[in-house]
Image (tube, rainbow, N blue to C red):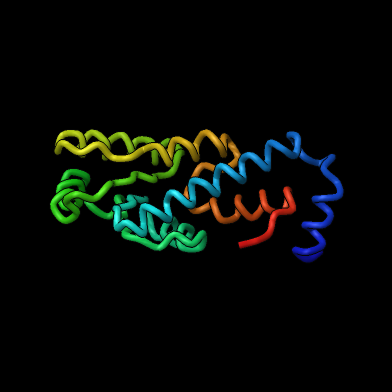
Length: 158
């Protein structure tokens, strides 16, 4: 079955869904708002901290191309100091995965940034955690999840 047939079938038959269709529509709308917010952060030159290259690729696939920094490639204290020194006046968005490892990394990064007098933005990560619930737990799964929601709701593709 091709993508077009799949989208038609999902619009026609919603009996296989775990929740009412409007739940998926709301999730998609909320995630697209978050993607727009990430896009604005990227356009403004703000720093978006992720865990790795796959996260960067996923965000690029969603149309977010910006100043990404990978937190897993450095010691946390040096990483945070370099980010602050090289990006004065810019917002810092922490977008680690919402699994156990990502949560520990987010907590460590936040503590280090606070010690440097910086309050990183965690709202996007928190909203994604809340919206996706247990369906996905990482940034790299976002494009596939968005595609799935678009297929279920019959929304147009990228």
